[in-house]
Image (cartoon, rainbow, N blue to C red; front, side):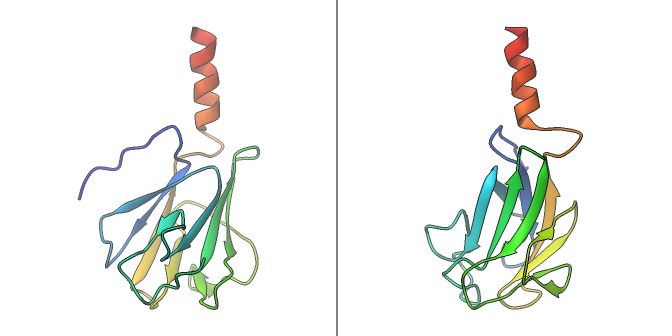
Length: 130
């Protein structure tokens, strides 16, 4: 697969198993809606087992450096570390999320921002140097 390239807009990447094996999906600050529709932030277009509607939302709160997952508004469930998501759950590095057919769309959460690094801090450092 292609190497993962982080941009200053990326808060994390979700790296997935089949049918998207080896791909990563960049996540931004704020809400990242996951589903099959073109309007989703993370679009899983090639899998009809994933709802078109928002199945789950990964949230990055840049102010406190916190990631979480919340259920979407579809009838489908999202699983966090093999447990159904019914309310907000805090995400940490290497947590798994499953959508659609269980085990088919297994995401591994890899944060790029957190207590040790944030793009906002990095940009502030760059501004101070100018």
